[in-house]
Length: 158
Image (cartoon, rainbow, N blue to C red):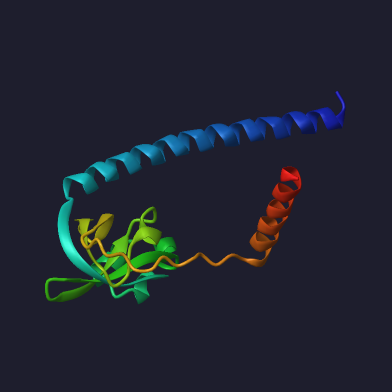
């Protein structure tokens, strides 16, 4: 057998082993996440709160209790998390927000939120008065693509 064929076989075996390992690891992580979701749903409470501010910040800068910081894995302590600064009753506190709803959370509005511990999982607006809708800023390349699509659409109409 030639050397190139042996090398190709070894590389193929290594790739197959890596794919199998990733599938097994992915299934374990999915089971763990489903168990955590069940726990979050069991502990969920609906609370009325005023959202003061929302930011993405590091865990140790967020003003969370030291017990929370100690329980998080060391790799996650340096990553930025979506943090909400809220007022519940007469207490001001920092809560961790779900990544899926972070962009939809209104600032300086009173909302009803589903909270599980210090984790906000769902937010519903209490007040019907929503402020003026701000147009999302586009980057340079998004503007170019939008202009190109408008020109292409205008040429097709003619």
